[in-house]
Length: 176
Length: 278
Image (cartoon, rainbow over all chains, first blue to last red; front, side, top):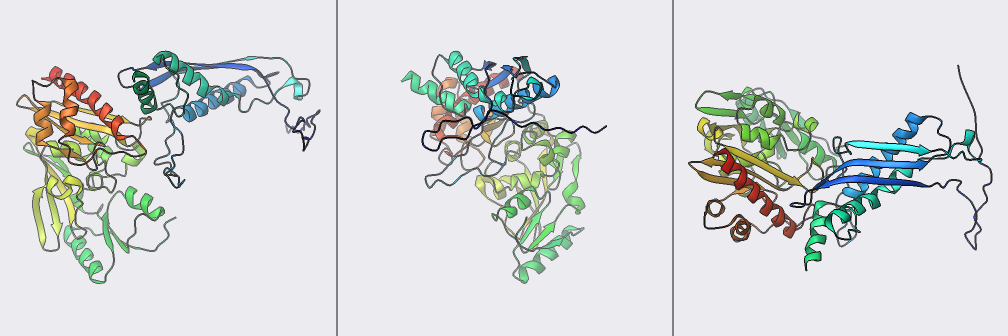
C-alpha cells in the first residue's frame, strides 16, 4: 500500500518590510519543562535524574514518535546547557573545532528518566488538528537546568554551559 | 583526508624495523614508528603531524607480549589499552587506561603510544611512574634497558630513531593497594582536569598526576607532603603548589584555579580511600 498526501499551511502572511509584522511561521504553543538534578556540593558535579516535558502538541497523530521527538530535544537541550560551547581565543579563532575537544553529552549521560505527556488542543490549521512539535523539547532545558542548579546552590546561575567549573566560580564569587 | 603521501612499512622483527628506520633516515625521510595509529591519523588529518614514512610495529612479536612470569610483568608497546585492561596484570594500570578516550579508540590506542603521546596527558604513564617501570628500547646501535621515566618522564619523547619495545614492571609493585581518580571538564570521556594514580608501599603513599602541570609527574617532594601527618588534608594542596614541576595548566578545559580546587578534593579522597585499604 502506498499513501501520498500534502498539506499547505493556511493563514500565512508575508512579513512587512517596514514594521516586521506578519505571520511567516505558523506555530506557537504552550508547554512546561522541568528537570530533577542531583548535585554534589563538594565538587559541583551533577547528574540529571529526570527531564520532563508537557506540551500542547495539537492532535498527536503518532504518540511514540512525538514522545521520542521530545526526548531527543531534551537530550540536545541538556547537552547545550551543560557542556557544549565554542571556545574562542582573543583573535576570535575557535579553539575546539573538532569532536575531540568540542564536548557533548555521551550515551549514558542522558537523564535516567524522561517523562513526556501532551495536552491535545487540535489546531484548526494543522493536518488532522496536529501542530508542528519539532523543537519544543530543546527550548526549556537550559533554563530548567539553570533553575534547578541555582535552587540547589542558593545562587543565580545564569551563564551557559553549566559545567562544574562555572558553578564553582559562581560559588566562589558568591562567597566574596 | 590526509593531505600528503607517505610510505608504509610493516616489519616482522625488531632488526627489520631498525634497518627500515635507518634506510628511511638515510634518504632524509621523516620517519615515525606507530602502532595503533590514532594519533597519527587524527593529527595528520588536520596537518598537525606529518611523515614521509611510517613503520607499523604491530607485526613485531616483541611488541605484542603481555606476560606475567611471576617476578616481572612485561607489556609490549603495541598492546592495546583494552587488551591491557582486560588481561588486568596490573590493576592500577588497567584502571587508569580504562579512563583514556572511549572504548572504540582504546581498541586501537596502545600503551607505547599513550606514554609517548603528543598530548600532554599520557595517563597510562602514571601507574608506570609509581611502579618505577623499566623500558626495553631498540636503537640504531642495538638494544638497551633504562627506566621508563628517563625517556618519557618530564614530558620527554622517545628520540625518533629509537623504538620502545616493552615496558617491565616488578610483580611486587602491581600488588600494592591503589586508587585512581579522574575528573574531566564535564562528560565522562575527556581529557583530565586532574587525574591521579596513587599506591601505598610500606605505609607510605606515592602519587602521580596528570592534567595539573604541562606533563605527568611523580615527585618526592609532593609525596613527602602527602605523607606528612602534621598537615591537614585541606592544607596539603597549598603545600604542594610550591613543589610542582611546571606552572599549573590554564587552558580551555579548565582554569589553573579550578584545577587546584579539583586537586584539593582529590587529595582528600585519595588519603581517605587509601587509609581504608591499608
